[in-house]
Image 1 (cartoon, protein in one colour):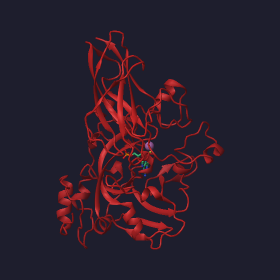
Image 2 (image 1 turned 120 degrees about the vertical axis):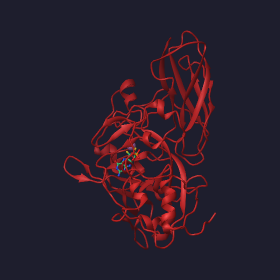
Image 3 (image 1 turned 90 degrees about the horizontal axis):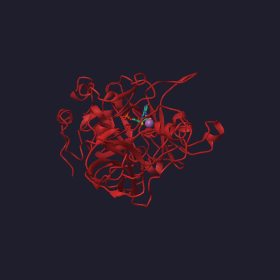
Image 4 (image 1 turned 45 degrees about the vertical axis):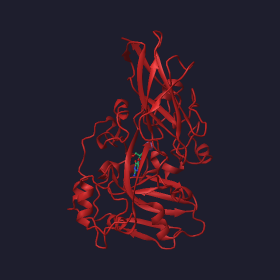
Amino acid sequence: MTLPPATRRDFFRHSAAGLIALPWINAGRTARLHADEPAVRDAAPVRKQLDIKTEKPLNAETPLSVLGERWITPLESFYVRCNGSIPTLNTRDFTLIVEGLVEQPLTLKVGELIERFPTVKTTATLTCAGNRRIEFAATTQKASGLQWVSGAMSNAEWQGVRLSDVLKRAGMKPGAKHVWFDGLDEVVEKTETISFGGSIPLDKALADTAVAPGALLATHMNGRVLLPEHGFPLRSVVPGFVGSRSVKWLGKITVSDRPSPNRFVASSYKIVTEETPAALDAVTPLYEQCLNSMITSPAEGAAVSGDRLTVKGFAMPAGHAGRSVKLVEVSTDNGQSWQPAKFTSPVRDFCWVLWSAEVALTPAATSLLVRATASNGETQPQSMPWNAKGYQYNAWHKVSVKRA
Ligand SMILES: Nc1nc2c(c(=O)[nH]1)N[C@H]1C(S)=C(S)[C@@H](COP(=O)(O)O)O[C@H]1N2
Ligand SMILES: [Mo]
């Protein structure tokens, strides 16, 4: 559907009110964002209701009970993962650079992106690759990194323009194979200050499907302009990929023949059993999220009564197009038998699905387990091998219960 050109004010009035029902927007030649626009004022902070892990940099996760309540996570409950500062940016000065193996390097204001490329919306679940890391400590050995419990995961409706449209406008040169993302934040390392960087294969950037772009350059989240902590005014959102490839405060896109040398690609986000340069060099970066599921209700340690119990939670497919969660099962006898759950939300590629199960409970039951099985037959493992950086923990999730 193509709509008549909207005025800049109209566009932002709609966006500020969260009323964007327009699949395609051509905002007209003069569209520019300025500091006094409602869209910029709309970036004012939301009071977050999260469990804070660290204040500086800001890292905060969503309580499990809250995650299970809504398919789309409200902004106040969307987890935050920052490796460095939250830069203070305004749309008047902000420019996105597109360079590298392209015929025509581009510099674009946010207003120009919105004006020159079709607007798309997609729902995608972001997961930090280190989510559930704390369970390595409980089952094998502590892994390095923030000890996320289970709430470094949230689902939002994102709006922006397709990365593929921007890349096609720039024109790819022969040899182009990877797309680098550079953030405008400052991450203080031992001997230097760097910016956070991500990288995705060009194939993924161009893999637009009917439900989702391969990657989105997002300006809005849940119908509102991005919040400062989520990357205002522009971030990449890579549906199905680990959260670290969705780079916030996105200042530069570089097309290259190889993955980014940024340390968040070259040495973080790799599955290794020892953190030596040789071991890290030998493996490719993590891209796709893994199959996972969790129980959000009852809560850990809850008192339960009776012989029937309602158990709720979410399940996440691995991040490949066309891969969905086919089956979610709950066990009340330590995995000897399993009872199926029903889906209670939309089922979409790159999104979690909410589920609910009415299970029979014997007097002897002391725990609940969940596992998901995907459309390709993959099932979550009962236990999982340790890795030094503690990524992609996806063994059966367990909640202990006691008799009321
Ligand atoms: N510029 C920048 N982008 C970033 C990060 C960061 O520290 N800096 N953290 C990444 C990681 S590790 C994750 S899991 C997601 C989290 O996105 P959110 O904070 O919007 O939930 O952002 C990614 N993008
Ligand atoms: Mo992350």
